[in-house]
Length: 191
Image (tube, rainbow, N blue to C red; front, side):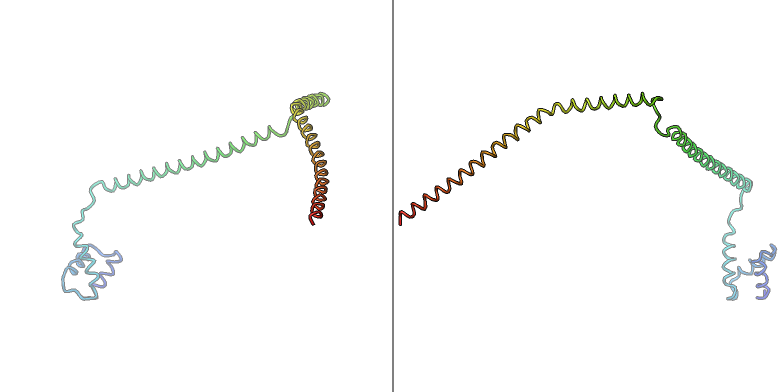
């Protein structure tokens, strides 16, 4: 076979335009050992196909099993989409429920409410409560009156002691002067 014919057949083969007879011609040509150098790569490809000839053909019903597996996979994927959609809708509904619940809660509890409809009664009740608080504070401080008395007594005692110390210091000062004068006299007499 001429190189030109082989090139044309290979071009048809790679374009998928060859018949079974032309493919068998190519397989037979590349099974020989004396192939020109320019066709060595193509020879390796055809040798591979000849070695892989032992690959089994798919069994009967393979196509149907393959199609049913693909269909079941698509059905499962559809269930996943529905599940994701339900989760999203449930999350949105929960968020809206929380939002509306919060709004209703704060809408109903807006500000303090009056317990008395008449302001004079409210004033009288407030005065009662304040008087009660004042009485209890005063009764609590009565227990501290004894502490206050102790404080006064302690302060008076300290003032008395301070006055005494001042008198003693004055007297000590004069005593120091007498002692110094006596020492001076004693020193003069020794001389």
